[in-house]
Length: 129
Length: 370
Image (cartoon, rainbow over all chains, first blue to last red; front, top):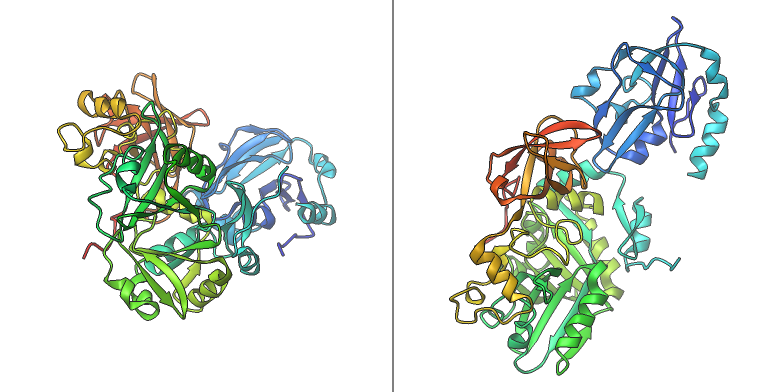
């Protein structure tokens, strides 16, 4: 059974968003997503300084099997990307909620995340999948 | 929606934790908990067990069956020795490829064929329409297991030592733990290995016996695809189809010399005019392999462009090659751009990815040739 963490928000397309102490929001893909994708071999993240929009494409994750788009859970400016994924994309498989994060956003309006799924709602999405 | 067919190993796949997907009308394991990359690497280094029971197995019998089959298959079937088999294409009247297959001569009057799952009904209809006087036995009660990898022969030594004396593309009737089997030294991974035809009723027992050895892991369709791609082997319906001539597909090696111009059994097969013309005049496009710069997998459908930005071709198979730890692809380009080391561009999500025409296989073949 895939891990669903309680303290973070999710999209039904399997991205997660975590509000950090400094007000930025970290984005990644869920344990369920990494498990469905299989071995991740390449991650394309947005550029630092670029704008991402809620519900819009912000990157791509490629597994041995297929390519999947990554959607941003919120609108804002990208302030950091996980450069370690360039050399070790498999970190997304081994640590989807920690070392395998994708990018950090300075949100335009953090309340956008209120519309995202909480852990219980996301668990239901995974069970139906 | 028609219900998916199941191979005799379906319950075992589910028990092993496989992710089942629809494939050629069957529910098949795409991967097991080990994952595609792990399965791929395990198969190269140890032993991989594949369920290929969805493929079509059939026997065609009758006096002079070899020469009758030669009208459909551009191979010198009469020259095969008993229990010797060969890779071949089934051509259509316009010299395109209806399917690729393995054909094994059991004896002068008996041939055993293994054809692609997605093509089997159409292949059988095609063969029967041209071979009306011959007896067909469709082996629906036979399963097919492939055991591939560096340590496959050492394991076979314990199961059916007779099969270890076979060289690549030869077969024998044998027994494993009392189960009658037909074993060939062949496969589609680039590794040494065996394909084992066994009765459906005994397939699960045989698979469990093989899996009881610690060096054996079950391998799904995902790794089967990455293994064959690294080995530079074509996938029917992707890397060639009814429009493609075997010469365009770089499968000239599958056409016996005696069936080419100047050979003693020149032409005389469906579509031979185009195929022999393609050999003589050359082809305008050709299937080649590509090495990819960077890490972005270049997949089927990606356009191929020259330095001036003109589209010159398309990728027909591509993905990530776990053994070479880099993306690999194959596709068609004009003959003028088909030389090894030619630099081209593949377009992925509107980004230009540098690719280089490369010799295949991408990994050394380890077939046992004696």
